Image (cartoon, rainbow, N blue to C red; front, side, top):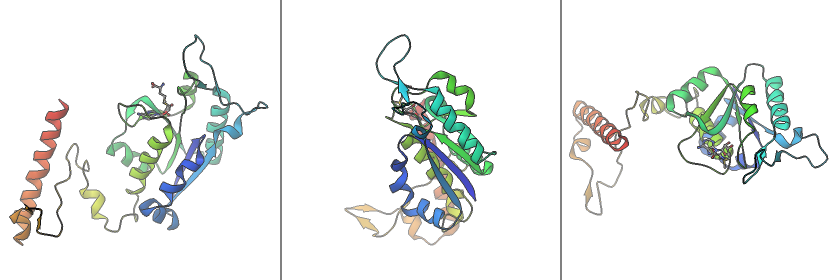
Length: 224
Ligand code: SAM
């Protein structure tokens, strides 16, 4: 079983996404287990404070090292093999290859920030820093949920058809999925490409390959 842990101030954030569709089925089938650890439980002062004002001044609050590091230690105590990943816009970009790497690892702890982010010294206690992309979310929870979802669908036995994950975008480095069509044949004047109705499997495969490459090139040109 893949063992995931999430360190968060909002454990309830994960209730709904983990109770739907593929993640729900994977949990029920015992393929993955997602434990949530409330960081605030590790605050030691009377007010259970997890944040404080930044040294040097400026807006916002910073997550304090003591409760966060205590929560990381608890995650490592529960699972000595876990890899602790801090969600932060300054981290390395999350990719499909990264998701596959996490699947192979089998043990993952996702550390979610809030406010202005973490006291910088916390970085010394994690294994890596990970970003979902070049934009700022209000907390690490939506980022952690995306990582969990991408990992869960890759776990053996999760998808109805094991081929699906292999054929998804990025399964081959940098290559996007081909366009998909279903019934009706004509929708508001837009026709399904003839080749897909031809029954000629070799021609369909060639068309899909061409379309994948065309889309991938177009995306690369947009990114350049
Ligand atoms: N002041 C920080 C900055 O500008 O880099 C942003 C902090 S953000 C409001 C609060 C938390 O959301 C972060 O500590 C991090 O855990 C999470 N977060 C925000 N954007 C993220 C992203 N692109 N990838 C991963 N985590 C993100």
